[in-house]
Length: 524
Image (cartoon, rainbow, N blue to C red; front, top):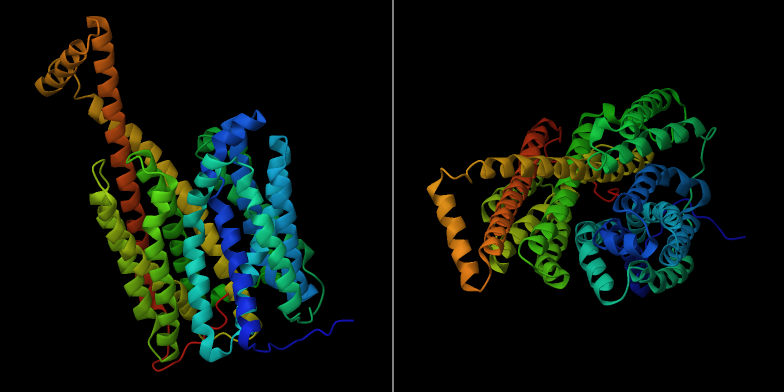
């Protein structure tokens, strides 16, 4: 019988880096899969004979299982052992990826995406825990830097890789690409990861698990489907809302009373923990909402392809990774996380504001490159310092519990940000379009001049008078729609910046003792 370790044993040499590469690759693979399907929904719908609304559940199912499993990961990992749990999660994710690609109906695909999300969420939540047990404290900044870069890079690269595979092969390859990586990761994780395990004291909190699944699952479903179903005009959304309210309320009451809670939300009574939790929500909004807006804008309005879109953001992602390692070192040397968090969020707010002004149909690569570098700089100053601030003064199991909350809230923030920005952009588009159309009348000399200029141009091409007038009207309609969309998406970037600016002042209420060195090794 394999010996189970209860204490971390730090690794050295090649073994240490094999573990690092394995868990980081798994974490990035899981994060890529959160957004890789977004660009392939039309191809999936056409191939499986499904509607776009039905195909949207392929994205929703993965997000729901992700958000449910992440807060349970610490508990499950302690129950069955880190090595067994991580390796089983890799196997589950890999097998589900194979069955997703081989699906012959939309219902089959949605089911296996849900299963894939269970394995993937566990990989993300366990990856940094494994790193913490692999690296000695004096080298943990390296691990946090690599892991943090993956958190930022994964969701961003998803649409890029998905677009390339779908355009050049078929939609099934967005899932099949995980298989060889998963097989190698399974072998390496089983061979090298130690089976660290802690005894679970007391009865298992089954009611807490059930209420978490109902409450958080319904909330995620509400956020994912709300805009598509016109929010509270849909009976389905109303049911999700009340299930979320009842489930989360019951979960909170249960976890406050349970002797052995599956998620110890009592930690939110600690000032630094709840401030860090809200900052993590804002960080999730900034990452996922920006990732949603940027590729849609440059590919939809500037005509960029997936490769061009991805190459532009790679330098900023590498900058983020380097700065995360630097930040961990600065914190270990006694620099207050509060200072670093302010620098990071200020840069992100600056990025959103600059992008608001630069997002035009005429913008080119250099108009987007430097703002992306500003964003990468800002993200590099957020992940590790927020973890340090949130975990300040915590020890032992409280560290693991707070870290689990951190991961869950960052993903939940992403879901909230996507729902908020998507709804905002859609409604602002309608407002801008109506406003612009009001100016296109017979009494507006500028619009008349534009219309008749277009008509003359089409007549010169040999079109009949009737054809020329129809084509001129269509051209003006297209111009109005394009301008309305550009304005609404630009305002979407600004909205993200405003949200971050509203949350940022909370940093100043956190309590860090003067000269205190914050342990960020538990930031997982």
